[in-house]
Length: 161
Image (cartoon, rainbow, N blue to C red; front, side, top):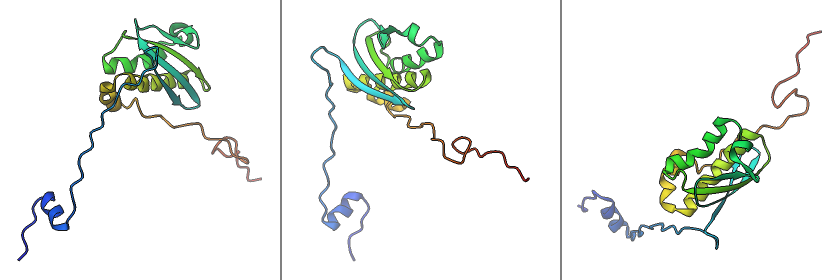
C-alpha cells in the first residue's frame, strides 16, 4: 500500500513538486531629493497630487490654507483620518493640488493621496492604512445620462393618452 499523505509537504514529495520559497516583500521608502513623498489620489471625478514631508502638520491645498479651502469641519476631518490611523498627527506638512469634482470628492482625493504618500514615506504604516481601507481608490462615479431618459435611469413620466 502507498504511504499515507497527511501534510502538504508529503503531497509535494509524492507529486515531485519542489516547494516555492516564500517571497518576502521588502519595501523601501520612496522620497525625492527634498525628502518628500509624492502620490496621486482619486475620488469620483477629483484628482489630487499630494506631497508630504516632515514638518509641523501644516496642510496647503491649491496654495490656500486647509481651513479656507475646506471650510466645513467634516471635510477637514476626512483629511486628518490617515494621520490619526497611522499615529502621525502633526508630524508631516502636506502640499496638495486638486482638480475636478466637488469639495467632497476633492477631500476624498486628497485623503487617498495622503494615505498613499504616507505608505511610500514609511512602509511600516502600510498595514494600518490598508486595514482602514484608505489605500483603496473609491471608484464610484456618477453614471452618464442616456438619451431618451430624464436622467441616467429615470424615465420621463408615462402618459396613457
